[in-house]
Amino acid sequence: MSLNQYNSSLMAKFKNRGLLLAASVAAGAVSCTDAADELKSRRPNILIAVADDQSYPHAGAYGCDWVRTPAFDRVASEGILMENFYTPNSKSAPSRACLLTGRYSWQLEELGNHLAIWPEGRYTSVFEALAANGYKAAFTGKGWAPGDPGKVDGKPRRLTGKPYQKRKLKPSTKGIAAVDYASNFKDFLADCTGDEPWVFWFGSREPHRAFEYGTGVSLGGMSLDDIDHVPAYWPDNEVVRNDMLDYAYEISHFDDHLGQMIQALEEAGELDNTIIIVTADNGMAFPRRKGFAYEHSTHLPFAVMWPDGIASPGRRDSSLLCMADIAPTLLALAGVDADEVGMDPEGKDFLDVLADSKRKKRDFQLFGQERHDYGRPANQGYPIRSIQCDGFLYMHNFKPELWPSCDPVTGYLNTDGSPTKTEILHLRREGVDSLLWEQSFGKRPQEELYDLAADPECLNNLAECDAYADLKSRLKKMLFDELERQGDPRLGPDGDVFDRYPFHQKGDNDFYERFMAGEITEYQTGWVNPDDYEGSNENLGR
Ligand SMILES: [Ca+2]
Image (cartoon, rainbow, N blue to C red; front, side, top):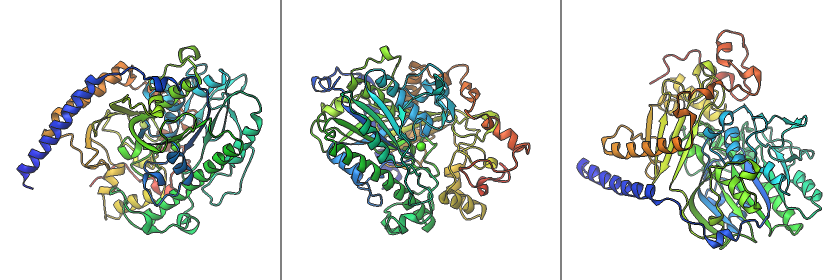
């Protein structure tokens, strides 16, 4: 193809997409259908299973054959496999806050940050709302975390219900938690002797790092050749492939416990009237994924089953859904009015998806982040807002002068330590490859624009291409108009308010300054390696 031909085809594509974009803005909301209405107030039991750091499409049902997930696949085959489910914010605590409140992370004050303190008496969680309305609510594993939930009557606030943590197991690797999630769930089921419905949160601690190296092969029985594709922004070598399989092995642990829970429901005769939602809080803990706002950071697996409620089970659905849609869905199913329980969700329920009524609710999805882990001067976060629409992702980095993964001198603390991270850092230090370092740890321009169909890895930034200038400005306007409507403080005169919210642990405040002053002399950060710390922030680029 000649350059002229290429330019014409690019323009044609751009124009078509532009028309779609214009049409989608005008589309607006459509009234609710009867089929969806019939699911309201049915008050089923609710089991929500949340993996810790699992990316789309890493489940068998999506065709990924290096991850073994028979339980997830069963939920998909007997329910719905969602193809476009996202978190607005790819980090544990803010993503879980979106799930529990139905709001976007920039609408949650300090809860928009990682490692925050939940404001006392505010931001009712959907579990609290259901518990106040006749549901028995409980959880096992990781609830809303990490952060301080505050206290009610001297006890930790039950944002995800009553804890069931007593049962332990002997983990098969050093990376897997010793919590027997499935047995804890069975204890809960045994306590559900009345007629009231229940809601249970299964917060797996897997596949969160660290993994035990080599266990994907040695225990999971997988082969490095099973991986069909290594993203172009990581080196494709034995170390990285092992790291991916070790992650896959932890996913299968999560899945195994989910399978045991489904079996327990079946044996108790409770499966038909239980809605089971399976997803994850954020993308996998590898460089350029968790903690970032790219397609691979925010796109999550999602499957839902409910034999008594879902119409035409065994289907795939490509509706655009996000974490903030879960709470309003649960409220609608439980027949609880958001206002009456002090909730104000921005997300929309997806009863139409469950009812297969084909109503398209959302044409675009917003994303954003503020402060995640510490490791920048003055407790600063890395503010981003972005929008996905018609297959394009427009991203606005408010402070391109900052390091997106936190400062090199403090070990890029917003990227968990890992064999893959170490590989990338070493390749730069040894003068072999700086591009991979640039893609995961280097500074970003203020604007980024990606064509997700052609470039799902988000490596070819189109923001400065003339052919995309009009599209870019329209996406930017859509993004900022919508954020303004939602009351995002980042657009106001005091956007940096997010940097002033304290960390929930006092010792985490001013980490950068204290580290630079020598007050912190040991590497007191358990989730990165001492070797991740660079000697200086200077002379790191290509
Ligand atoms: Ca997480």
